[in-house]
Length: 289
Image (cartoon, rainbow, N blue to C red; front, side, top):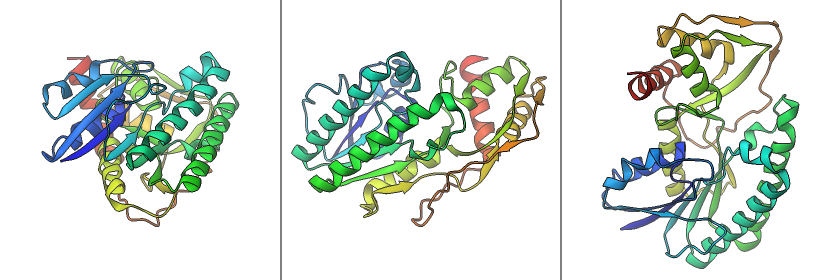
């Protein structure tokens, strides 16, 4: 039986990945979270499964069991924590990376670490320092991986969305869906391009990557079509049968400067239309029924 650890398991991607892995009866899944940026909500369906073991745990402390595979999802997308205290955020992130790498070395585990590397070219100035910090940590991580010959791959993700997102999640798509279902109007100062990747495609490809043992240090798991924020909002308004309106104040479009490398065959097959419709249905059922 494969013993698999998911850090940050109560988060959006972590909980969805755990649910997917538990479909295979040969998997024993351990989940760790300290709820610093999440809640128990996504864990309730998982706790009913005997092959899922949860430990409320801070990753600065020693992990009390050994595993074969690790998905290190803790601390991804934690812009809010960075804004509270930048200095502590950086020190904590580096200490967690050192701890999880040491744990990986001791156990001889294979580890996948999602990264926000693809977001470094954000045009919003207030976010630039945050992503510079993420890049610094990624560079440190890649150095540790190379120096210690760790069996690790970084999986680059962009705007991941889908079912299991919480109503109060402030990322673009869940916030837009919530506002549309409340018939709020939208205003964009300017338009932007993003790669939006549906959660099903993300978890399927994370598992595929875990089993692939790619020699590439960084692999892209991103939908290969860019979409404008305005088009996504229009689609959300339509799928939600909302009376919301959209206004874009400038005809300037900020292009995505990130160019994914699709050289490895990780396919994202869920269209934006299908993904948005599924996510809107989920929101209606969970929060507006």
